[in-house]
Length: 326
View (tube, rainbow, N blue to C red):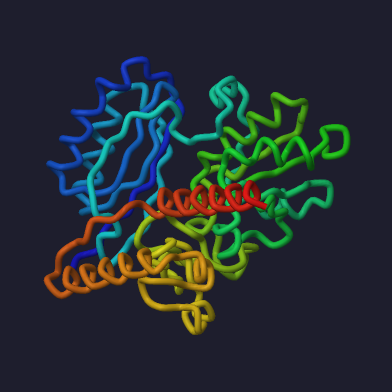
């Protein structure tokens, strides 16, 4: 199969007519053989799609014919297979959900730092380096010395800031995320709460890996991505992790060697949390996946982010129910 171009893009821009943009955008994706998901909201556009070089170029040309998308942030990598199963354009209230409707990245975002200047910034001993991603992403890889907030989802980040950061103490704060979009909001949130010197990595980890030679890199591990590649290495090639088809958590070689790992049914992250009915359902799903693979077909499934969050919500609900019965 020819190389598949994976294109991650976003732009914060006022789109009062965002619902009108959905259908033309979906037709452009379908007409050009692109799969993946784009999100549209009044605050802008965000998403990742994949397909042929000509298809990605056609999408960017379609978007930039609208002057509001001039300067859209685009990052590309290459895969030897299509990492997405579906083609979707969704209308949302936010293009990245933080749950802070008063935050305006167009007005308040922190200072951009280019990838080739990032090392110098984070080596400053006065700079506090914060990873704004979720705990399962940080577990796969992060910058050396970065603080891990251990958040379960991005909505948890404001509470972590309230409990752990102080503008009087933390004079310089640098933050990063996968593609740069979460940091647009996280830095804006800090600035709205009195932090003055706030920086973020322009283009995120993906741009850093693309720009900085591996021998000069301060990134350790791999980078989690929300598609079927699961992770990418420093060369932006598919990494060494796979994903549990039951809970969608990333799995290392050690995880897959565990007695708790059963392909498609359980892993060390979810073993013991499933009923017999769950296990039977996952076993049947795995059988259908295998049949689809043999036929060379894509098996439709939920996105990694959606399934991980769904499982977390189910686990929290079960814990709350248990506390209520104690």
